[in-house]
Image (cartoon, rainbow, N blue to C red; front, side, top):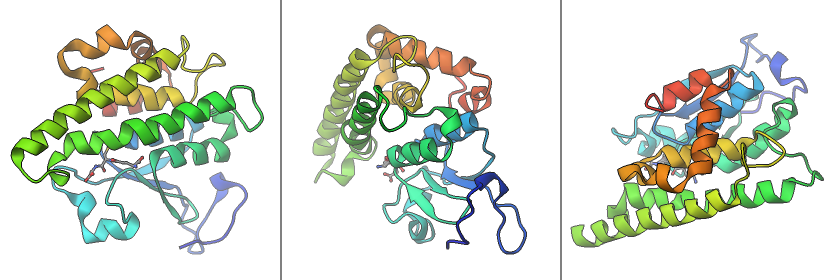
Length: 230
Ligand SMILES: N[C@@H](CCC(=O)N[C@@H](CS)C(=O)NCC(=O)O)C(=O)O
């Protein structure tokens, strides 16, 4: 699906002369937030195509052609290639749009810390969300599923405490805003951290980051779309 290798992505045009932009497959209750927010910070237009999780559209044969793992978000690049995995997308968008300062560049002192916690959230937190949301995929019966759901919710909260402890203020990285803020704030908005005011009691720095994100001019519309209740 690659139409070529334009160096200036903003000026990319397909061979039919149709302007090509990013196409994001996602929905508001998903990790598509991080990707849309990163693109907003980069000032890049994006076409949003809704994949309804409630209707299991992410598992449809049609969508699996785009992303065989049957998960969102997935992003079609202006050149045509499809990329999935939220952390990979954040790294890729940081590379493609350095002006947005989504990640410290290679060689920067803050880079190791940024990659460490990006990978931690991708590998230790995000997989627990599937178990919490779809425990029946991992258990033989209802009782087993209910047990697993509780355990996964516990693990998410426990691991988000580690993220909280690693976060600086007012942004995750002492150097300033980055994609780490988007990723951490997103997990903190999801059900497992929200229940019973747990988030406010336990994740004060991430809550402050979320409040600051909601005020960033480029991000405001994206924030309100995904998290209308703050
Ligand atoms: N490893 C993927 C995980 C993505 C993921 O779990 N997405 C959720 C929505 S936030 C999803 O599509 N769930 C539907 C399903 O598992 O069927 C990533 O990092 O992007």
